[in-house]
Length: 183
Figure 1 (spheres, rainbow, N blue to C red):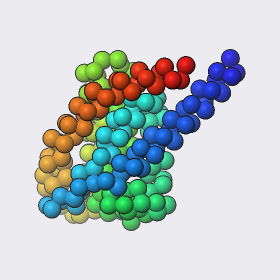
Figure 2 (cartoon, rainbow, N blue to C red):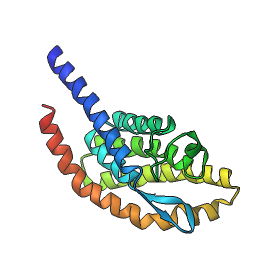
Figure 3 (cartoon, rainbow, N blue to C red):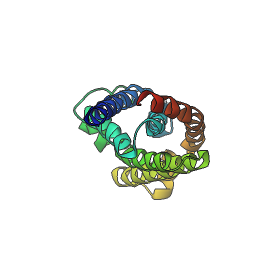
Figure 4 (tube, rainbow, N blue to C red):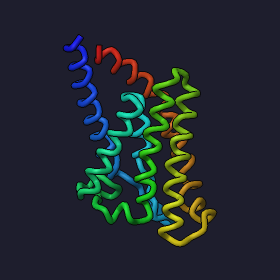
């Protein structure tokens, strides 16, 4: 029993590290949008995939590790940037808000075994992430909530839908394969 628990703990530590690395690799690759200071990012897709691979708390932990690595200056944020200034800028609220995305999405994926619930979890996770980020953007940029939505949310929704479809198709396959590995 003790050996199984140690193996499980070791497996979880390795998986959290791998998921944090996946987010770190996806973070810098962002497409700037001419009309918005918020780029198109692959971070949500990486979070969605990690939610299939980890318990919801560990998914949140892997994202927090990514955030901490970026805060200390490693170039894991968009445009290969890092540091506290990035969190104080217009995209900082989204970076922090994605903690909620990881937790909510992970919770739904871990608790329910239906694809429509996975999608609901991803949608709700993004709502929380976008809400936190948009509120910060309004505060930081001194704009209205409606203007922030038109700059930082609405243009990104089609891309987020594509990321959700990709994750909903690939995630369950990875989840099943990883379940076989951890036994």
